[in-house]
Length: 253
Image 1 (cartoon, one colour):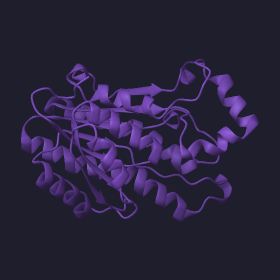
Image 2 (tube, one colour):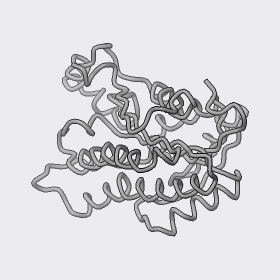
Image 3 (cartoon, helix red, strand yellow):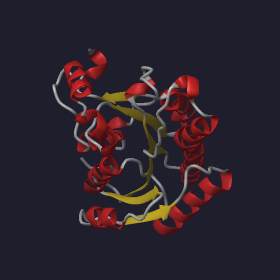
Image 4 (cartoon, one colour):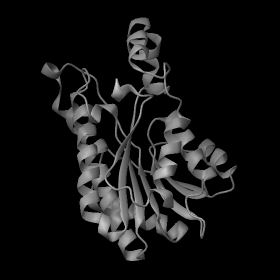
């Protein structure tokens, strides 16, 4: 499945959980995408794996916990200097803080919202302006969550932030569809990542989760990458404002 046949597509991908991001980036690379990764730690091994697919990979070290207007404009500027243009934005960076709502700290709330919502909006805004400047439209894929639809437990800020991502996806698509910019999201379910290791190691919680998933297993990280690739292809050109659950059927149960 090629993202773009007539020329090599250029992408900004913000980097979230390592195992999930690496598989996602490799899927995009196999689809013919040059990638600018944005994250908080060096990505030399990711660069090796991505470039083995025959595409280019560059990265910028950025801290999304301190977002400001110039910060996002500079990300776009550096990417265009490296690649000449941007065709796709994948917003995958995120953080969470667990705690009882009665004791939840303001600094924890602000930290989650800055990374998961504020950074997503203002980076997307900066990239959309570049799309418009280029005059060719573009693709935005946000990474939402099952907590975009449900409340979860002991993660009030994370649940609120992922609900915000679902609404933001629809809101931006309403404004930008006419400009040729597709804004969509995926909502991953229970995926085998470092962040879910504790749940998988807990026999009771693991059993409860598996009992709810019709396919009967946890998702694999590369199963997140495939729907992202699809949303970046011409085949998805009439899909706007959609949130695709990638959850083994969990939401339908």
